Picture 1 (cartoon, helix red, strand yellow):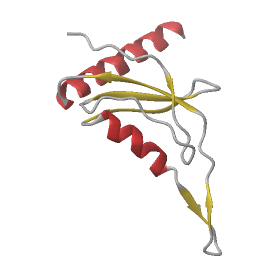
Picture 2: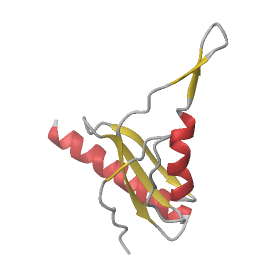
Picture 3: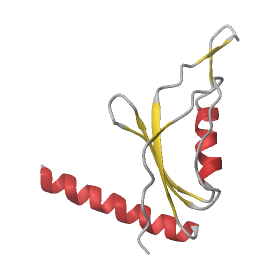
Picture 4: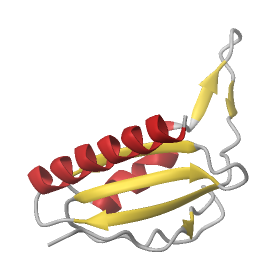
Length: 109
């Protein structure tokens, strides 16, 4: 079975509420900046919902020399997911997608 991507969805801003709509299953996620379409993250994971939820936690806070911590602004992002039956299938599909992109970019150049 060929895995298919979901539609692009707006990633919820931390602290403003909102839900991430992703299955609790292995798969691939792709996250991009909403304004430019530039890649923010792409990975094959065991649990899509958990992996996407952890993105906002990773960018959380930055430290300063004086010990105070400021909140780093979280960018406007969009995400899509591709569910698979196992992590091994997710890795294989991700490698194929990376190879297809590389081939397409090489042909376009």
